[in-house]
Length: 73
Length: 255
Ligand SMILES: Cc1ncc(C[n+]2csc(CCOP(=O)(O)OP(=O)(O)O)c2C)c(N)n1
Ligand code: SF4
Ligand code: SF4
Ligand code: SF4
Ligand SMILES: [Mg+2]
Image 1 (tube, rainbow over the protein chains, first blue to last red):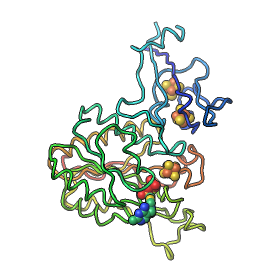
Image 2: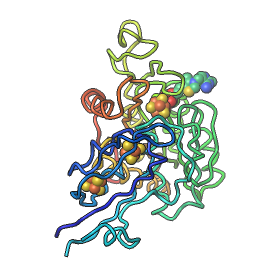
Image 3: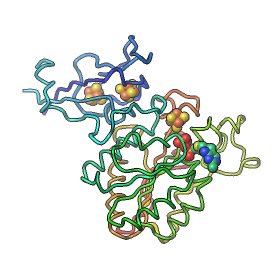
Image 4: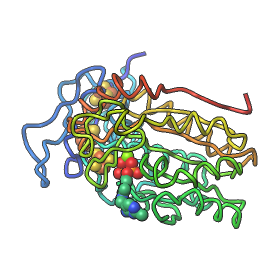
C-alpha cells in the first residue's frame, strides 16, 4: 500500500540543525535559504516524495515537525 | 491527491507530544537532550502516568529539564539525583520516580550516589546521558571521554597516562545485585530513537514491579563541545563512541 505524506515545520522554533534532513529516506526535507526570527535556516519540505514515515519528526530534538499521512487511492 | 486532502487533522501521524511544554528548549541546535526529553514525554503520556511521575533533574545542561516535560520535578545538587530519588520513591512508593543525569553528574561527582542507589536496589529509573564531556561548563573532560578525544581540558586528546581511562559505568552497575534492567541506547536515527523509547518504557514499567533499579544509558552527542556540526557529531558518535559504548541490553533479570 502506498502512502503520501506532508510535513509541517514550526519554522519559528526550528533551529536548523539538519538532523531531520540526514534522516529522511526520500530526500523530502531540506534547509530553506530563508532564516527565521532567530537567524536559523529552518527546515522545509521539498518535492512530493514524502511518504509520511515520521523519521524526521522523531529525531527532531526540538519536536517542531508535524507529519500527516494518507493512503494513496 | 493534493496537499489539502492530506493535511487534515485525522491524517496526523506524528506531532509534538502533549506532555512537552511550549517552552523553547535552551539546548544547542541538534543536541540529543531534546530528543530524549521527547521520548520520555511520549512514554509518560502513553502510560497515562503524568500525575504519578516525579522527575529529578541534574546539574548539567539538562538542569532545566523541568521546564520542558509537564510533570512534577525536583532539582538535585550536582550528582545527588539518585539520593533525592531514593527519598522521593520511599516516601511516595506509588509514584514513578526517575532521575535524568549527564555523565559528569552521574559518573564523576555523583559516582557514590549512583553506585549505592543501584546496590540498594531502589525502585527508580535512571536516564543517563553519556555525551563524553561536560557540556554545560564549556566542554571539559568527563570520566567517559574517549582516549584521544579532544576537550577543553585535554586539548591534545585524552591521554591514559595523564588522564586515566574512560569508565564504562553502565557495565559496572550491571554487576550490582540491586539492578534489574540495564541497557544502552542512542537517539541519532529514527530506528535508534524508537528502540530507545521502548527501552525507556520498559524501565518505567519495571520500576513499578519492586524488582530493583532500571538504568537506561543514552550514548549522546554534545556537538558544541565536540566542535562538530550536529550531523557530523552523530556520525562521529557512531564511528567512535559505539566502539567503547556499544548499544544493546546489558542486563534484564526478567529474561
Ligand atoms: C558542586 C558542583 N561542582 C561543579 C559544578 C560545575 N558543573 C556544572 S555542570 C558540570 C558537569 C556537567 O556535565 P554533564 O553531567 O556531563 O552534563 P552535560 O552538560 O554534558 O549534559 C559541572 C562540573 C557545579 N555546578 N556544582
Ligand atoms: S531536526 Fe528539527 S530543529 Fe533540526 S532542522 Fe530539522 S526541523 Fe529544524
Ligand atoms: S515524513 Fe519521512 S519521508 Fe516525509 S519528510 Fe519526514 S522523513 Fe522524509
Ligand atoms: S553544550 Fe552540548 S550538551 Fe549542552 S546543550 Fe549544547 S550540545 Fe547539548
Ligand atoms: Mg555530559
